[in-house]
Image 1 (cartoon, rainbow, N blue to C red):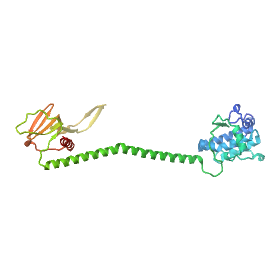
Image 2 (image 1 turned 135 degrees about the horizontal axis):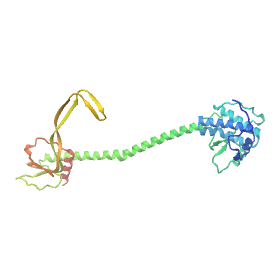
Image 3 (image 1 turned 135 degrees about the vertical axis):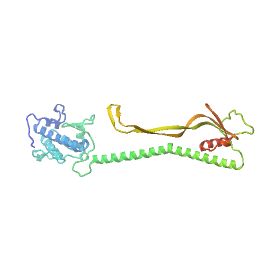
Image 4 (image 1 turned 90 degrees about the vertical axis):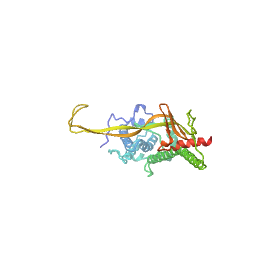
Length: 337
């Protein structure tokens, strides 16, 4: 690819808004305008490949050096050529360039290497009210840069590594904090409540064994005693409100399948060939019948519900399933009475 000049050559920026002497000089020279466009293409190549931050860090030193050229066209040309060649070393498109003006070969200084006079000159040519600087169609953010060619590690990659490490540390700290809060407000209260229940159950069992070893009749009075017609020498030994009466009921289930082929006539309509074979099975299930108060006396087991009242002599009871939680509550009530 070759570099040519035309009478209507224009730089990559708007000449009507140019205020710096170097920009005015570029606008008045076709050769400098064409070099500015090549440098601008190299800058956008760096943005696409390395990202805006890396491209800005590579461009700022050349921008500062060109600013120091003022309206010296030979100096501006030298800085433009050096900038283009530097961008090409990073993979920017190769173009044929004119020779470097030997008498104006300068090097772009790093920000830290500028003397006080140069720093004051750069400061005076920069609008303090603006945080962005427009140059050759490129918006360059004023960021901390590193002099090119120094062999130091890439600042943008270092920042990315630091950001990832910081994000990982924040994630770990967040997980630790969440785990601590979950243990403090969920697991610990549950474990404490379970420990208290186990302790209460153990104390109730111990009290029950001690009570029985003394030959005393144990009573489970967990509520008010209903009005009952008591038999001779009959005493109330237990009252359990909120008791559910359950009885077995026969439940029949059927299973079967069609034999033969099936033809679909329409959506949801099918025609089947063959017969239906099925089996029916019956089993017993417990069903809730009523809810009420269970009263245990020395002679009977009485259920008083909303729908039904039953009284069963103790000698007819063949099996008892104990509910430890209910018994513990009743024992505690009797002991504290």
